[in-house]
Length: 223
Image 1 (tube, one colour):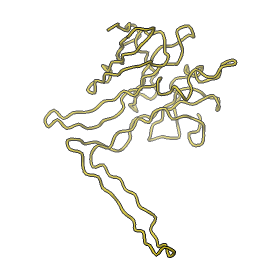
Image 2 (cartoon, rainbow, N blue to C red; image 1 turned 45 degrees about the vertical axis):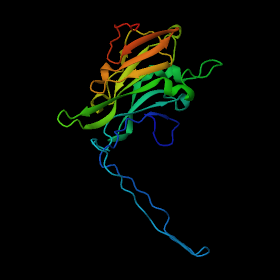
Image 3 (cartoon, helix red, strand yellow; image 1 turned 90 degrees about the vertical axis):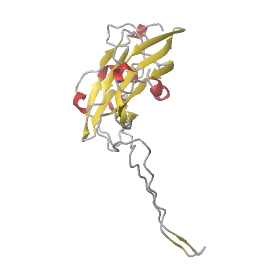
Image 4 (cartoon, helix red, strand yellow; image 1 turned 180 degrees about the vertical axis):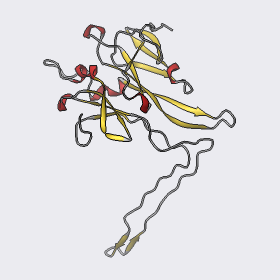
């Protein structure tokens, strides 16, 4: 398994929980005297007020994902359990060919299009009694392999950030045969049910719609 510290792995997505309640941040200036200017500096701290109607957990218990290039010989998509950061799992080896340089050509997935190939799918919990929101987090990672159908594309896939799914295989999403970057993609989130989140994207001059929970036998629709 590749090492995390010091390796050229690029961070794809840190599936972080957002601190929504009792958010606190602190910093301190360098305390001490400046005899030349006859000034004194003192430390300070700041505590932010609670956000009205919001609560949450600042800890991160979900899987983290990153891609690794061919420089280490283990290209592909990896996941990390925050409880075991030294043991990443190779989630999608089929992405390897997109991260490897081709003959006289660079890799299909490179730094400039990571943000157009991997989309975080969010979810949130809502209290039915008081309407408060909590546990805002990333529930899925939706991504393409960067290839067109003429380049043996595997289409689009999703992986879950739940720790219990770390060893599950990626799930193919819809019959879409091209996993190239999203062009002017729009996301319509269903924060209550992430698999209902819809992706509206442009392909071949037309608009197509798929939902994250669509299986590989469901064709994209033309809205």
